[in-house]
Length: 199
Image (cartoon, rainbow, N blue to C red; front, side, top):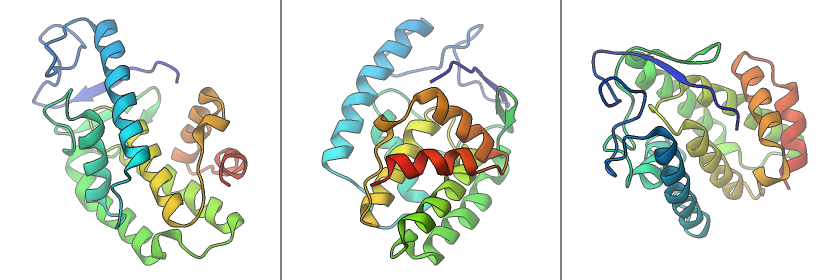
């Protein structure tokens, strides 16, 4: 997807001093090298999740567990709510750090009340998926890896509801733009994409 650097404001630094390279278990200090290593490792972890889904109940803890599996070999804080206050990317300002937990309860409580979106016809399922994708994007609970984690969460949520969600059937940039609009409460582009990639 397009390269948009995060802006982070908090008392604790996630990056090596004087750099924007995230501290990592691999000891990599070069940003490009870390990107390559991260892509290779997370691809293998996503393949593992594809073959062995972890989600039974679709709670916030499930999202955190998925993040931990994907990024646990790279970052100490994998699966943990980001510390600090503000996190932004481009023009998008995400949920303030201290309020991630309470907002997560509202969002995932909604998913639970809607029976994990089970029993819906495709049109309604797509509509509700677009809404919750926008909400979880706005939450952005982790310091890095939110998109990959959310996509895997929603893939598993779809499987549980007897749908197949295949992100490979859309262009990454189009999905990114649709995600940004959904973040701002405009769901039509994301709905149109989901109609094509949900079977």
